[in-house]
Image 1 (tube, helix red, strand yellow):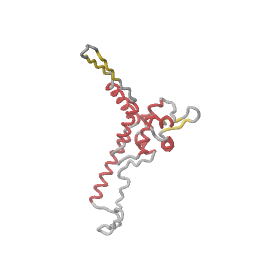
Image 2 (cartoon, rainbow, N blue to C red; image 1 turned 135 degrees about the horizontal axis):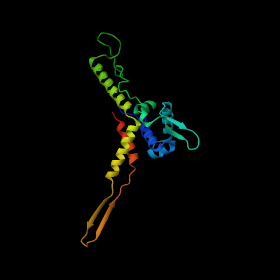
Image 3 (tube, rainbow, N blue to C red; image 1 turned 135 degrees about the vertical axis):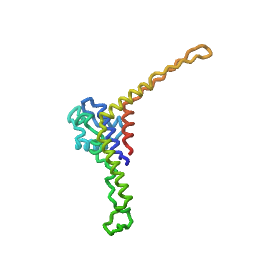
Image 4 (cartoon, rainbow, N blue to C red; image 1 turned 45 degrees about the horizontal axis):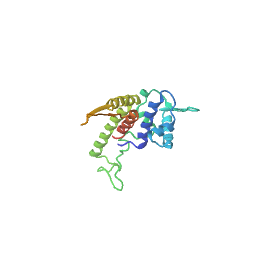
Length: 199
């Protein structure tokens, strides 16, 4: 199973909102600019997220969106379900024959496949669906935000200033300072949303 763009964008936008809110409304224009997601597309997503009770809107000057509840009470399943993602890999397994194939069971019943192989495959994907649902239900925005901060802290350690002193033949010392000033939080947001994208 692969999540569609609406699921990945919804998770990215929610992480951005959580990171930049601090209890204050965040405008979709700001999320659009930081995450390079179409404002029109964000408006569609946030209408669904609001209907799903994941966010709430604040009207008037300084308005925007805030989380509807604590970041530790909003799961990945809440977000993906709100925007209509199919997070059940067995949902469409009906036993219908492949297109253009005429099929009848050996006992003459119905027109659906009911072989041992089909039932093994359906059982496997049903079990996979249970595992996925559990993972998405037990992973919250708070979990990802703490992981993002941990990644940002590690990135800061790895990009600490490195000073190299080189002695030349004329006994002059050349000091090379290398400073990498990265937006670690936004990088972490993108990394985590991409990690969620494939199953």
